[in-house]
Every structure is written in structure tokens, then in C-alpha cells.
Length: 449
Ligand SMILES: Cc1cc2nc3c(=O)[nH]c(=O)nc-3n(C[C@H](O)[C@H](O)[C@H](O)COP(=O)(O)OP(=O)(O)OC[C@H]3O[C@@H](n4cnc5c(N)ncnc54)[C@H](O)[C@@H]3O)c2cc1C
Image 1 (cartoon, rainbow, N blue to C red):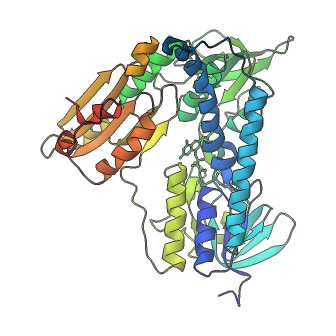
Image 2 (cartoon, protein in one colour):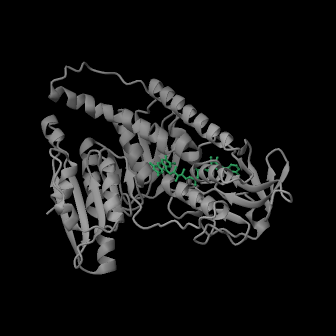
Image 3 (tube, rainbow, N blue to C red):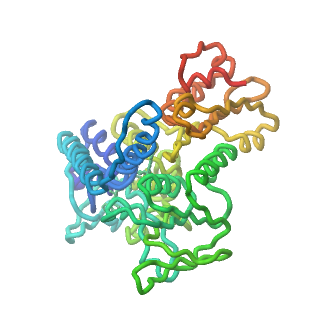
């Protein structure tokens, strides 16, 4: 193939999906180049999952230090230094960025630190004007924060900039109610900011189980996070003293120091030249693909967030692996999108796999729901009035578990293991047959009533 083209495979975007696809295709012997316009590692490593999770660990110390006193620790009043945390986070990102870069180069992938756009079914143009050709092109350009085009929107930030704030603002307004909005609400709140979350509807975390998200709302409000519901974002105005005035429908304007938009993520296809290969994106800008990731152009494939199917790192990685296995490894593979576990790293976190109670009822009619609503032992001693809630949704005839939904300390860590059982099609009986591991929070999963 590479006799007639510069490369067997040209990947656009060295994020979660693009890195995996390039590395594996190259390991199978393909001649591969990957273009990256920002930093190798992509959203997850550079400005997504990794730095966010590190901030969440950092934020959690606020509660841990307070709770420690109830466990006998004489904790003096502690200061928090945002600069120390973010410097250390950036150092860790640099380390992972280096590791990703060496993995690619060690596998013989050519990294091109530049933007690439498609100019035809087998051709691309790089930012420096160079033209390259490839037998196949893989678009793995991810997604980018979507910001409403309201007056003063340029005064706001997105999650991209949140990691680079000079200091924690005293007051912050977050627009949106998805997982990024709720996670950053928790982060800023724990670091001492007054947080107001404003949302067009009165539903946070659409797609998660109703009782679980209600529990998060109740705990967040109890902690002091403010919510403005049925509020359509109208605009931001800078006031003489430098503060920002946020206006919205249905509520009085709010004065704040920082506004963060967490109002969804749009696939990165603008100016990508896909029309030159006969590819039309959908209304959201996503690239339509079949179940092998192939686009309307036979030589061009797309994976990850740019296809707007499931915008999660492990899914992009799985799609990249399946692409390389199928086309370069002689192992035809399809990604199975059933029972993908997901989490919201709020305070406390949420974790979920499978159908919610509502979805299961719509699909199957009658379902059986088992729940445990409990105060974790650690919270009891700490005097922390936060209850955990675990829910198991089962087929009422076979007992097969259709969904598992949890909110409480370490819920994502616990759910990852339980998700194996749900994926394997196990029943509630299999959980009942398993002896509890005591004393843990996870034991509630085998004691559900
Ligand atoms: C704040 C935040 C928190 C998140 N937390 C989680 C989480 O906890 N768990 C989870 O599973 N997922 C999380 N995600 C989502 C996750 O980051 C994405 O689903 C994942 O990164 C998608 O991988 P990808 O390969 O499709 O794209 P990306 O990782 O976004 O990579 C795309 C790459 O393409 C590059 N690029 C774009 N256009 C071009 C071009 N024309 N030429 C060259 N390069 C280009 C970009 O610079 C980028 O590096 C989070 C996202 C955000 C924003």
C-alpha cells in the first residue's frame, strides 16, 4: 500500500482513540502517521479525565480533613494552595504526555505536531502546507466545549480554561447540569468558592437514574451549592468593579467572579475538509459511521467523540483498538455498546451501568427494583449526614440484572467490579449467593432487599 501512498494509515488526532489506533496499527506492521494540533494524549490526558480527577482528589481533602477531627486527629486549620496543586497536576500531565509520545514513537508511529485537514479520500494537508497521502484516513479529532452565542459569552470560560485559572474565584456560576458541570461544582465548592449552577430545565444529569440524581441534588444543596432551574442563559456583562453580571430567564441576575460553560461538547469537524471526500456531518457536526467506524467515504473512518456516540475515553479506546484489529490485525472486531459503565465524580460520586429504573420500565414493563439507602459507617462517625443509595434494577421474570446505580463514597471504584457481573448477565440471585465482605460499603450490593 505504502508504495502508492505516503502512509498506510494517517490518523488525525492523538487523543484516546487516535493514539490507540495508531499504536496498534503500527504494531501490526502498518506505516502510520498521526497529526496532533495541540498535545499528544488529547482531551482525557491534557484537559479532561486525568487533570479533573486529580483536582477531585485534591478537593476531597477539604472534607477528609474536617472528618479527620472526629477520628481523633488534631488537624490545625489548613490553607489550600491552588498553585501548588495545579503545578503538580501539570507535571503529571507532562509525564503522561511523554509516556504516550514514547509509546507511539517506540511503535514506529510518525508524530506530526500540526493540524491536518482532509483534501480528498486519500489526501490531507498539514498546517505548514505540506500535502500527504494515505491508503486510509482515521478521523479521531474528538470534541470541543460548546458555548452558547449569547452576549458576553467571551467573558466566560470552559473546562479547558478551568485548569489554568490563576486562583479559585470567590464566586462562580456554572451553566449546565451534565457531569462536567456537577463535577466542577463539587471541585470549586470544596476549594471554597460559592457555586451557583444554572440550568434550562430542573433535571440534572439527564440519563442517570432519577432517585440517584435527586440524592446528589439534595446533598449538593445541603453542602451549600446553589441551583437555578428553568433558567435560560441570557448573557454576561462586565461591571465597573470587574465582577460579572449573569442574566437568565425566570430569575434575578447573579453577580459573580467567574462563569463556566459546561453546556455540552460538539464534535470537532469544523474546517476539517470532510466535504472534499463526500462526507456530510450531522446537525451536531458529528461524522456518521457504520458499526466498523467507516464513513460515507470507503477509505475514511472515524472513532471517538467526533462520532458523538458515547463520549467516554474507554469507548474511544475500544473503538480505536477494534479499528486496528479489524483492518490491520486480521481480527474483525465490533464494539459492544451495551452496559457501558460510567461515573460522575461529584461529591459524593455517582456510578451507573445498564438501564435506569425508568428506562427498564419503558422497555420491559414490570421490573423489580432492590435498593439499599444507608449511611456509610465512616460518615456516621464523622457526623456527616450523607446517605448512600444503591439500586439494582432486575427483570421481574428472570431476575437478570438490567441496571445498577449507586451514589456514595467510592461508588465508581465499587461499580467497576459489579459491572462485570451485569455485563455477564448475572441475576440478583448470584449476588445473594455471594457472602458479604464485612465491613464494607460494597457489601450492600449482596444484601439488597
Ligand atoms: C472536563 C472533562 C472531563 C472528562 N472526564 C471524563 C471521565 O472522567 N471519564 C471518561 O471516560 N471521559 C471523560 N471525558 C471525555 C473524554 O475526555 C473523551 O471522551 C475522550 O478524550 C475522547 O477521545 P477522542 O480520541 O475521541 O478525542 P480526544 O481525546 O479529544 O482527542 C482528539 C485530539 O484531536 C486533536 N485534533 C482535533 N482536530 C485536529 C486536527 N484537525 N488536526 C490535528 N489534531 C486535531 C485534538 O487536539 C485532540 O488532542 C472528559 C472530558 C472532559 C472535557
